[in-house]
Image 1 (cartoon, rainbow, N blue to C red):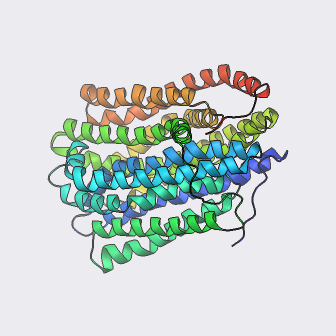
Image 2: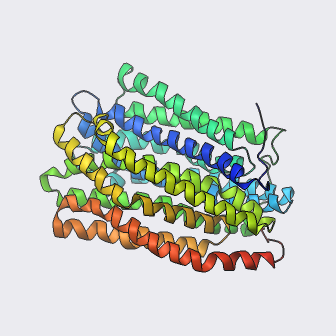
Image 3: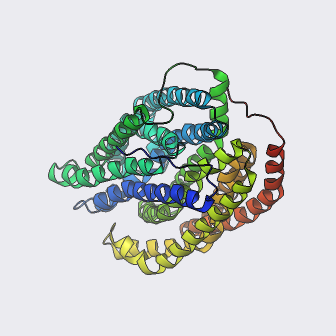
Length: 460
C-alpha cells in the first residue's frame, strides 16, 4: 500500500488545497452514488418501482441522520488532530484519535439499538410514510440501521486518514465501498429477488468493506499516527463533540428538513402525497450531486487550514480559503449549467412515469436558483470550524436550516400548495449566503490576529 502523505505546511498552498480538495470531492461524488444507485435500481423494480422508491425516499433522510453522527466525531476530532500535528505534537494527536474511536463505537451501538429495537415504525410514519410505502421503507431501514456501525465508523475514521495528508487513501476507501455496492445491488435486488432488502444489504456490506480498508490504513506502521487505546478523558471527548457540533448539525438538519418536507408533502398533497414524495426523492438525489461533493471540498480541505492554524501560519490560511471559495463557486456554476442539460436524462434513471418526471425536472430547476450563493455558505462555515470556532459555524448553520429553510418548507405549501415547498431551498440558500458572508468578513481577520499572538492550543 502506498502511503505518501501531503505536506500540509507547504508554501505551495494551491497545490496542497487541490490535493486535498479533488480526492475529497471525488470521494463524496462517488459516495452520492451509494444513494443514487440504490434509488435507481429500486425505482426500476417491476410493478412496484415508484412505491418502493418513495419508501427508500422516506428512509434516506433517516439514513443520512444516522451517518451524521460519524461526521460529528470525524469533523470534530480531525481539525483538533491536524492542529496538534501542526504544533508537532503527535502524541497528543494520538489521544484525539483514540478518544474518537471510543466515541464512534459507543454511538454506533446506541444508534443501532435505538432505531432497530425501538423506533423503526414510529420513525417511518412520523417522517412521511404511508400504509402503501411502509412495507418497503421498513425492509430497507431495519437492515440499514442494523449495520449502521459500519457507516458511522467509516465516515468518522476516514477524516483522520485525510487529516494526516493521506487524501488519496481517503478517496480509495469510498471508491471501494461504492464499487462493492454497484456490483451487489443488481445481484441482490434482481438476481436474488431480495428487492428493497437487497439494496440495504448491499449498502451495509459496502460500508463494511470501506471500514476494513480504513482500519488497515490506521494500524499500518507507515501511518504517521496510528489507532491506539487508552488516554481517554471526558475533557478531550467534550472538545471533539463541541467542535463537531457544527458539521453534525449541518448534515443532521439536512435530514430533518427533508423529513419535514416529506411530512408536509404528505399532508398538503392530499391523495397525491406519495406522488410528491417520489418527486422530492428524485430532486434530492440530484441536489446531493452538488452539495455532497461541495461538502467534500469545504471539509476535505480543513486539514490544511487547521494544520496552519496550529503552526500560526495565517498567511497560508488566507490564501487557502480564497482558493477553497473559488473551487466551491466554480463547482456550483458548472453544476448549474449541467442541470439544464442533464436534468431530464437524470430523472429518467428513476422513473418512466411522465408526470413524475415532469414535476421532478421542474423541482430540480427551482433548486438551482440559489445554488451559487450556497457555495459561500459551505466555504465560510467549514473554514470557521477548521479554525476551531464552532459558535460561529453553529449559529450560521442553524440560521439557514432551522430558521429560513424549515420555516419556508412548512409555511409555503400551506399557503400555495405542495409544489411551493420546493422554493424553500433557493430562498434559504440566498438569504443564508448573505448573512454568512457578512459574519465571516467581520470575524475572519480577528480570529487570525488573535491566533498570531496566542500560546499553544489546549486539547485534552
